[in-house]
Length: 400
Ligand SMILES: *Cc1c(COP(=O)(O)O)cnc(C)c1O
View: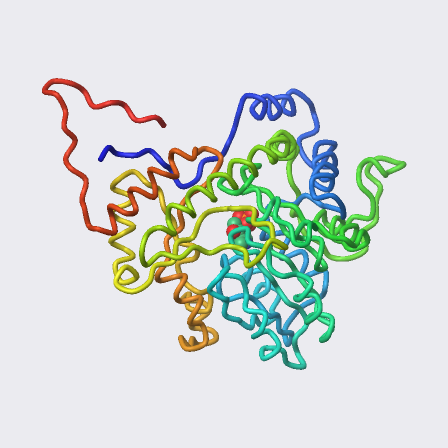
């Protein structure tokens, strides 16, 4: 079997992206200017509603959300055990206590049936993550949150294009937070977007994001004169990043099409392999944004997970693990709060028995077929034959 060339993630940067960044550098406004405003407007148009504020990262947008709602010591925030650590760090940095809830095994999303058990009189907010682009059942989440008067912060880092009941995620809760890190759906190098259906929330957070100055450059009648109404941060996006975001956003329809086509092809191939199940949305009310495909292994295969990863990588298939530990099992959190393995059986299953495979726009359905075949071969323990080269002939250079 020939060596494949299937990297896990690859930013899609074309000439128009490079030109947009260079054009900013030909001017004088390098931060917090017209490109940021236009990127925010275009992001809102892409979602089909709401308001938006660009930020320096998704974690900054999450942190701003908790600061805005004045979370602090003594407060509790319900968070999923199965997520990126940034979801939880943003809570912990305010001094509030994260309270972890296990996920369900069909989607990797927080198990909504377990939320109410985690609510106490100190619970102030609920953090939901659309796990690898699979949207949570937001109407149900909001019903529970409303019952206890909780703020809802949506972590949409992997969910550009994900919808529930045809409404874009990020517009159900009080805020939604997006990431433009290089391997996410679109990139600005580093960067994020805070969105909300509540315009006043976005307005207040926009000011907080920029030192809590009461008026921006364009609103000042005398240059240099402004007032400050509270403490604030510098969590802004630069104009170079925003210009890149604006050309990236135009690619979203094509990105969505390729990701969904690749996901369907790979899912079919993977489900034909015994001992493999695939995380996906439960029904067609939820539109998955297909960040990656998570194959969950069972039985004998589950015990061989790390060997499977090695075999796939050797064959040229890039893989990842989403996420390598339930967050409460990470050293910092287990030391601080203790860890009871019995509380997170599904999160542990995904951390310890799954492999994430790529479906990004840099790949084709042909790559999906090759990947499923490589996976099958790894299952049956066939190893790659040494490359058979004609003597004296150089091996074919791999595309980079
Ligand atoms: C990547 C990611 C983040 C962090 O995003 P940054 O923009 O790098 O801060 C947060 N949550 C989830 C679910 C992510 O995948």
